[in-house]
Length: 173
Image (cartoon, rainbow, N blue to C red):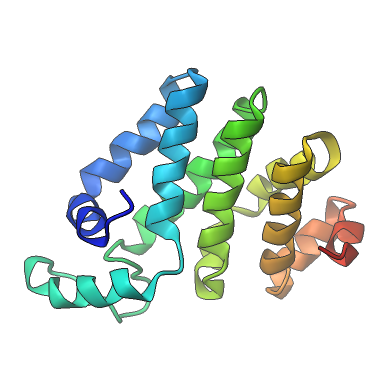
């Protein structure tokens, strides 16, 4: 999955990502979960080369890549499913530091695209806050970075404050 052309081929079919989200819900094997989250992290990374290659291949897709609500060829519905699927499973997979690292890194890659933050269901921020309060150092740092990015949107900053977690936003990383 580190080769851009393989990533392009993989995300050309939305079913591949849906299968990965299903794996996150059904599987409890640490290695499979970590690798699934790692694949999602790679897909969601801020990589302009992938976006350029997708634009070249857009003839195969019906969606324009630059229209509002489309990222890497995924529509708004799918973007919401991806980010909320990862966030919801953070709470379930908290038994493994490795899984939490890959999952929070995938979330961080998603929220670095500030226009995509709006697809996060606010109640799912609780899972990131829980990681900051209760877990290992590396996923904790990644969760703090996620929350700091997310808080740049006022409606989410209010929700983080309602959770009593606004002090997290002041932590220097």
